[in-house]
Length: 131
Image (cartoon, rainbow, N blue to C red; front, side, top):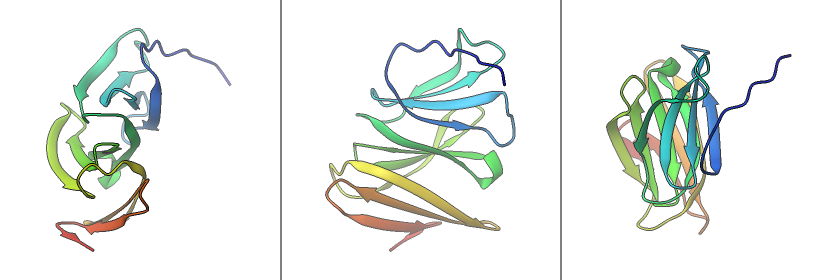
């Protein structure tokens, strides 16, 4: 096992490898920044974007790596295109909720997203429907 060091300037709060490109590592930080790092060039960000107004608590790849999901302390779950980090969609748990955890389940094209906040609110989003 080899060891590599990723140079970062803020506290990383979440990490996830791309299932399509194993040399790409997505990170989210306490400032709400989403970044994709090319592990072949550890000293530079591959691409980054301001994803949340406050700390980002979770990051997941979905749709076999064709979508990046982030959850933040601003109460939003946001969906990003991995190539250019363009915002695709956003879902809100509740105004000013601090989302502490998120998970996904996929069955074909059907995507479910579960999010929980520090105030114990739980929502399950299913494609464009929410429960």
